[in-house]
Image (cartoon, rainbow, N blue to C red):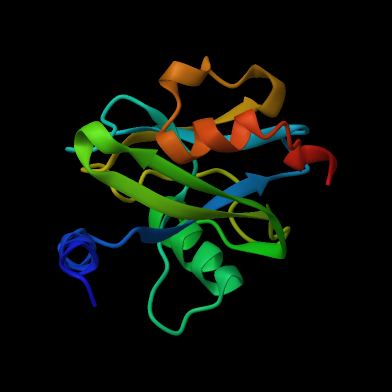
Length: 157
């Protein structure tokens, strides 16, 4: 292998790998055409609006990750889970690179129907927002912003 290829391979090996996230588009019959949205706290994306979600765990399905994250963050149980899309979000200035899988689920009818803020150190609180009335793109967390730019309307799926 020539010297240039070895240097390129060495430089690539030192770069962090992208993370894999799952974002949940949570819907409810009690809030037609709405999704749960919260404002982030913390180091990355503080003040930006996000969907419930987080990291995909080793060996976990996308559906199970969506169920787990929604329950951990909001106390809600979701069902009828389906894939909506995926985005590759890169923000070089802050070394942020995630592939985020968007899953849609509806709140189970027999359980609680309103979100609780179970991770107040990570989120200011949850509210129902109509998909068509999401905040402006520059107020959305990176993956959600990229997803909205695809033009996919998960409410009509």
